[in-house]
Amino acid sequence: MPAHEGPQRSYDAVIVGGGHNGLVAAAYLARAGRSVLVLERLGNTGGAAVSTRPFTGVDARLSRYSYLVSLLPKKIVRDLGLDFRVRTRTVSSYTPVERDGRTTGLLVGGGERRTREAFARLTGGESEYRAWQEFYDMTGRVAKNVFPTLTEPLPTRDELRRRVDDEEAWRVLFEEPIGVAVEARFADDLVRGVVLTDALIGTFADAHDPSLAQNRCFLYHVIGGGTGAWDVPVGGMGALTDALAGAARDAGAILATGHEVLGISSDGRAAEVTYRTADGEGVVGARHVLVNASPQELAVLTGDQPPTPAEGAQLKVNMLLKRLPRLKDAEVDPREAFSGTFHIAEGYRQLATAHAQAAAGRLPEAPPSEIYCHSLTDPTILGPGLVEQGYQTLTLFGLHTPARLFDHDNDGVREELLASTLAQLDAHLAEPLADCLATDADGRPCIEAKTPLDLERDLRLPGGNIFHRELSWPYAQEDTGRWGVETRHANVLLCGAGAVRGGGVSGVPGHNAAMAVLEQLGD
Image 1: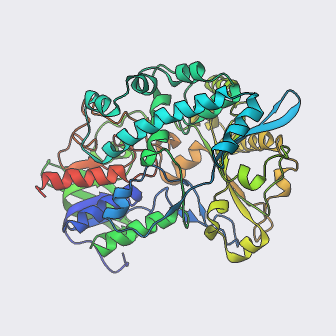
Image 2 (image 1 turned 90 degrees about the vertical axis):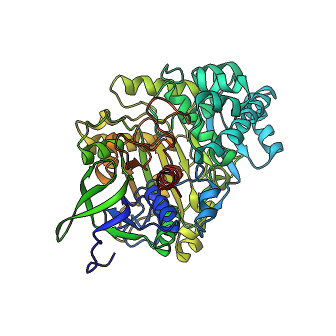
Image 3 (image 1 turned 45 degrees about the horizontal axis):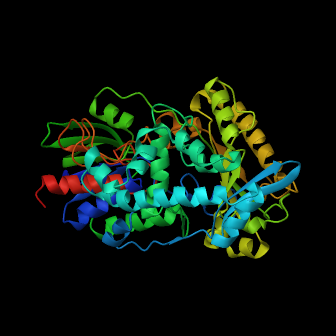
């Protein structure tokens, strides 16, 4: 909003936070004819779903924090008329390993025949591939039945169970630790690890954690789009939030950046939102307030007791390379290996060891991580000159690095962890990654790393948790409300990732909060 314009005195809906979920809610409500004001603390909208140029003088626009799309329903894209596209990765994953003194690996993708041959090359037989097919056929059936429910009122547990319509799948995914199924169905340690990784993205848990936090994480990673596919946003993640901001503005919503919300007061029928700008404080009235922030921030703003933060547990690294590194496994083209998910130190036993070491307060000796090269699928994020020269991006997501490990020396531990993580990658390369790194305009290597504490500082993620809190089951539980966005204040709703069925770049909490408001208004 231009600096000379100020918010009017009252709106049908004031949305606190201009991340992607807040923008989804704003667009839906404005399109329904409601007056909408979005108050965003930062100088831009988008939250964690933004594209930036992190390296000085380099024309590379990276998805800096979140970077892949799976959980965004096509319904939202259609409803809001978004000019937004994704591209499917031709390779699902590659996992290098040294076995019996030989360099090998597992390439999943490129067609059924190639994948079967890759399993046979790794394991020496057909049984692991058949088990893989059967397991993911099962999760595919679950995805097809569960994903459509995310934009509907919350089903009960029994209703969702009937929708799943597969008692074995329900037991495997919803009732017993995912480690039980992984160990029962797969024999190869590397294959087991590749399967388990989807249960650990941003979730600090063991395969057999009785809380089933790992199961909830796994479920959300395999149901996206009704298929479980994770796609690359064309133009970077900022293309999505730019499209959402445009849709909200076109529908009449006002987006006010540089407006930090300080408090929310509500009597259940009307509310007032206090905010601060560079020019001072102001107050705006609202019939409904939608909070696109963490449950902790919601509690602070409403004067309630904040819940205990859920600890984040990831290392996020962005890199720009002059070229992709060569692999020790000469049978795999680096352009294929890096176009999907490149797994490092993620064998089943390695993941268990890393978790145990981190739980004991130590950095994992072999930090597990996964790497993605988005520019292979979407070169538009690089300037034409970089594309011509063969430059590529790499994004690394490290597991089992809880925030507590960084408390005493965030900068020092970050550097130590980054070095050991890249050493695990180098062990599978025919040349050091450092030789492939591009440099910025000041001659510095194009690499940046973010710990959970960095994310807490930059994005106000409590504990650096990328999901705002532990992921929830996608069904109604005590006090979850009809849509999973309700709070104890009747006209204050949570539309951020901490809502039920939140987490990831989905827009689902924003959609559901908007639907809850329109239901209350009788639309």
